[in-house]
Length: 402
Image 1 (tube, rainbow, N blue to C red):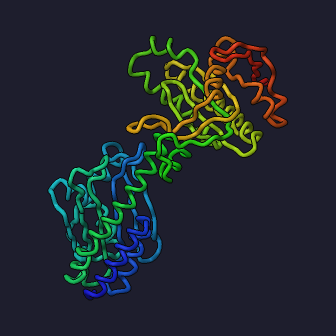
Image 2 (image 1 turned 30 degrees about the vertical axis):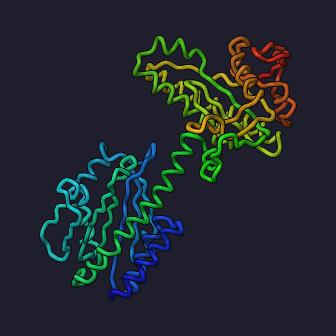
Image 3 (image 1 turned 180 degrees about the horizontal axis):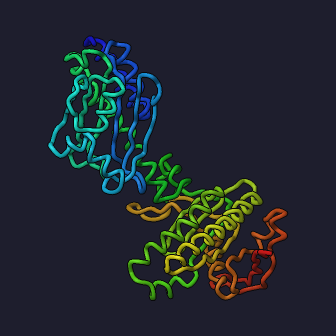
């Protein structure tokens, strides 16, 4: 590979990174250009840890036969289970343990290589392998994202030439920088969606970050909490409390998300969510779909927890519909992207009436009026109730399960 080729590919990497190319686009584009310029790559991999509640990181693979071209793997925790075993048997683990930045193996002989992945590559006809680690330093490490890993192999009979290795050493750091940039953008998306909610997260990343920047929207307000949570919390062992909250929060949040809603707040055992729709009937239908899915999840969850001898409960739910202000509220140093307005307060009060009315779900008369058929025929009145902090008594409805 000539210097002119390296300069051309370097310029493409920089421009692609600045343009927001994905990790896959950067790797596949680089590998294809290297092959065109005379560097006979057979397989290339880049890997970076991330900040995610489930995945430890992501790896991206390019293969010269197209079989793995653009493949993306999200890998789990490497401290336990099969993931830990595979990680300890990898060249990268060895490099970190020994403080190496580069490791190279010839795969052309028959001597033991010590790494299962390299033995497999030799069996697949690869002749040379090089691995590199580019470390991220300077106090800007996020989570476990402290380096970018890459590996390169060829099937060329003579392996990598010194000129080929020199080209990889010049190009791999630029690839690492582009992958870091793309991964940081992905981390930002994950963080705002996990902690703010999907729709608020997208709006914040889109520039909605000014205090007081709100819009008036029509929405169904979902307010739910756990029945008897205080009693359970007092009686349950301390190490059972967080798993209980996680189990029931997962049931609520997944039901809301699957039906197209957005969860805005987790308040101890309480959940505040909204269903936005241009058509109020559609929003009501989505909320009732989520309620039905929630009850199915709760039946399975309670059966499992009861079999394990762990405390069980159910979810009280209040539903209301109306206009709310949606956006940033707070101080200049600490903002919350949420909904405010009388409808939010009324939804909370309706949910709290579930105990008095001995019902798992209560909805307002406005919600009942906006609900389309055939769902509306399943709503039955439970009478008028005075809601704390609300001037007028409200007729409330519940679902006739029959």
